[in-house]
Image 1 (cartoon, helix red, strand yellow):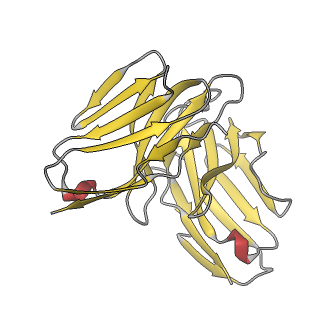
Image 2 (spheres, rainbow over the protein chains, first blue to last red):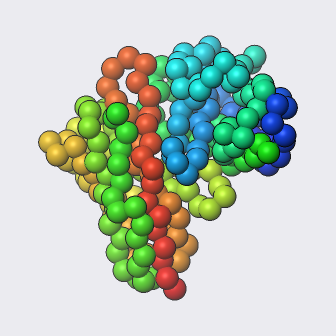
Length: 116
Length: 112
């Protein structure tokens, strides 16, 4: 299996621009998670999906952030408009067990976002 | 916050030595996990220990869990330069809609 695939790996954009990060979870996994990692705040859970349904988006920092999972093999995290404080590494992770949100997670390699 | 806190924040040892990393947490958990992150890469799951387990082994890794003290330790024996990475503990709380919460990590440097 190819593992969790994220794109782009690196994104540099200017403040105010829209950013879309993409994730393909491991086939057969029923839960998908979006995390953000910064030096100051560590790894923060933004949102997670079970069977393509958003379960908890309480970690999404602002209305500028939105996430979708239109099918079992694809999810997007969108930031519109982007701000310099959004600069971070964004990770997508998947898990085989829906409804058990504290099991082993399989992480992608991350998307490093820099907003100038 | 139920976030795990690792200790020490950074650890530097010589190849061949053992590395011990600790994690403390605040609330009841159903499991505790350790992950490794190499520089510029994603996190990789190392080991999961359930709340009713006290010790678990995987290769050169040994994890202990003391729920009465709300603490865990990760021991890496006979360390190698390739073990150089950041290590994170993650706690899974009990209850509905519980989430896995990560600590800020320990930076381990293994000198060849």
